Image (cartoon, rainbow, N blue to C red; front, side, top):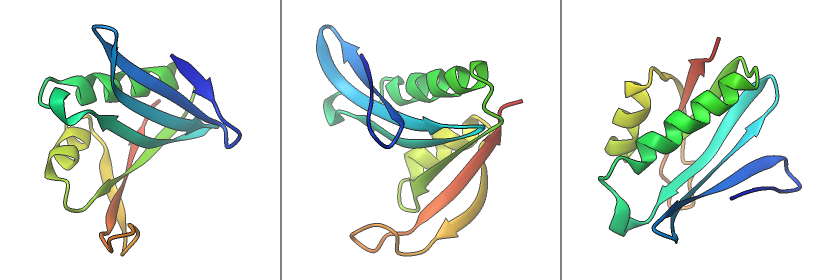
Length: 112
């Protein structure tokens, strides 16, 4: 299922056996921003985040986005490994961005 909200994010849900087990969204112009990927804790370690990220990259590439950006919490090693396995490059850090004071790494990937 897909919706588009007033900030121009495209929102998707991940369904498995008629149950919503995750969600993701992104914003697209000539550059894209993958805003959030979330998988229910009961469904992690099954490759769903990898499928979601792969789908997002392909979707954005097919729609002529040149570059995609995303952010990952500096304490989320699993997500860091995932995005780097797709070829995303760490291009910077945003300090103390999260409500709990955690920083994020900013990643980019060339889609052309």
